[in-house]
Image 1 (cartoon, helix red, strand yellow):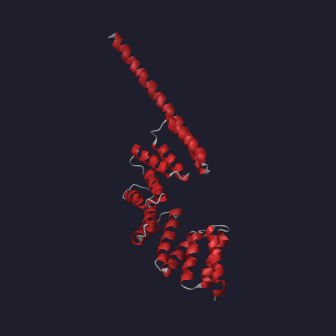
Image 2: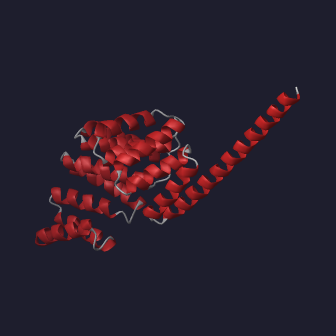
Image 3: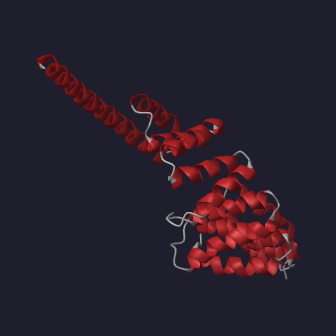
Length: 259
């Protein structure tokens, strides 16, 4: 009996020792992840990666750490590794909308439209997802790149309906407006593009891509005066940008056509 008691005490001591050691490793991994988060905010992705790989050595089964690793690899254009880590995060935590959305974005960046659509469609069915506009906008973009403008328009409108219901207007709002206006332009519906853009620009007066598409729409309708003004607005807001250069070239061509 005494021997059995000693064995039991040894096992209990070993259990608590292992538990304490595991907790310490978790704390080290969390510290590395927090430092990596600061580097990510500064867009110092190499330093962030170094910290995350260190954290992975301490505790690899942290879904947040795996998601962060995927994000950093995606920023460094290692989409193959990004996909691996996003999938690992989802293995560890199947109900992890952020990791699932990131996985879809990685597929988008890799031009794997069908895989992206499958991921985003699954996310749109998650009623507990607090940012449902994100998968809707990304789903629309995937369909747009497949030249499926009918579905792309549907999902952009679904996203915009959330903002009409009271969602705070953010970068996804701008993506939805820009994407939908692009569909209108591609299909020769310049008047609809103008209506959409003029209604949206007051919410984002510095969003120069919206002004660029507005200029294109006016030029399509031969309203060269308004087109010129909109192109000049792009140059004013974002001098030196690629769109500003295109706006400068376009405005030069129509400068003498203004009435």
